[in-house]
Length: 610
Image 1 (cartoon, rainbow, N blue to C red):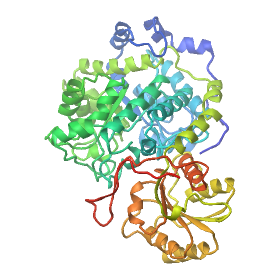
Image 2 (image 1 turned 120 degrees about the vertical axis):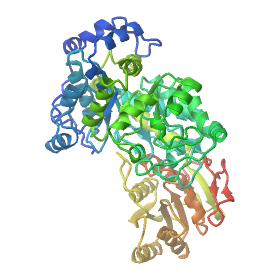
Image 3 (image 1 turned 180 degrees about the vertical axis):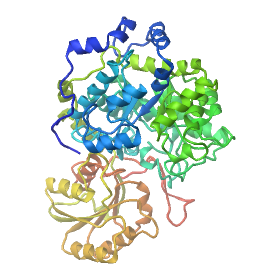
Image 4 (image 1 turned 180 degrees about the horizontal axis):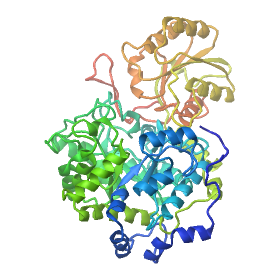
């Protein structure tokens, strides 16, 4: 994942100015007056002229944003060629563009698009060159999910920031804006111009399996302020931010990737709880909004998911909230949007509902032809397509893609993962770690009294591009801070033998740090912590995902919430444990009692310090 060489990408050379001018001659002639990347009002007459010259097939293609396997636009590895042929019927990104004329491409780590920054820049340039070299070729809007925290597609050495709930614990709009500004600048340097972030969902359900720590918190006012700040940061750096998931995914116990959630909020509750962050995003000039694959009967009682709901997307988002930017679906491969209609109907119904970009359909050929057939048979009009295409072209123009579609390796070197950016991420993280329990002032640990530290606990697969495993990262950070720390991975469901091994190791240590991950009443992680405490050694529990773990750990004398197990958040927790920085985070969500969920154990805003 972290190979620092560009390798044989098939498009490693930076296109010459002559190549750029030749490839973009058609579109730049039509947009001769294209100004700076952040021009406030693109010339619609020129954009409309572009649309008028497009074939129907090209118009249909502009509506799709598609995955493609490979690190190169023209020469991917054989395994990626095979995957492309199997799933899309093409060999490369260049062939995808030539066959379907897609308007956007989404990058994923699992699709091998994001090995390292220089390769990403080369891939982006290869994609733009392939598209612009086609008849009436247009620049491609390249996107990714770079939320930070537990969802990031571009990893080290790019700068990785704390996730949304950690930022919510920090509570700083300035930090949220800085995160967006730096993260946006790095994405843009690699040719990625649309980020599916920030999450605007208000997480009020501790059992939410899909949002959780991806949300800034449970207070709609606080979430709104941080969403607006992050939008300003991203878009100030020339990257389109995307508020998601409209009309709100924060109160569900079903994952829309694998099921079809229902939000039971009344219209009044939706207005108070779910709508404010999206209103704030719109007021901040958000470039795109992503739909949710869930049902909200109070907003549309048809039984359709919001992605396919005209009352929600046109009636509420467009008409009531006054939004006229780009609307992009969540992935059309998710079960939440596929459970009621077949894959051929979904893209047509989404367009009828008011969507502009159709993201990652499971079968592109089926979806593309379904839209084409719907226009030819009169179910969709070509004029309807033109409305969405114009919105997409306006965004491409605003982002400077007609004027400057390519990026440079020098730009990557000057921007991505710089010392200043990494230091900013560490400073932000230091303001997020939340101390919830500190009996007898156990923390900070003393190197004199507790020189030998055992780090045990859950080691979930590391979020994309981070070092991992978490116990190793924590132990390494504590070693750098002057302790003698060793790591012992016990997993998310330790066996009795594993617990016994950890207890034996704890007796040889001066203190124990236990990383916990989504602890439940019957969790073996809970038994592990209890038995570690019974040794008499000081135990510090670090919740490396949900802060709700603390309610299940009443015997632990010290508890911290880190909100994610990325390097930057774990290093911050280590510095707090060592007393190098004081804990400053405050809970952005309430933690209910384990024995009585109706009662709040720790309220929003709770957090101790030294």
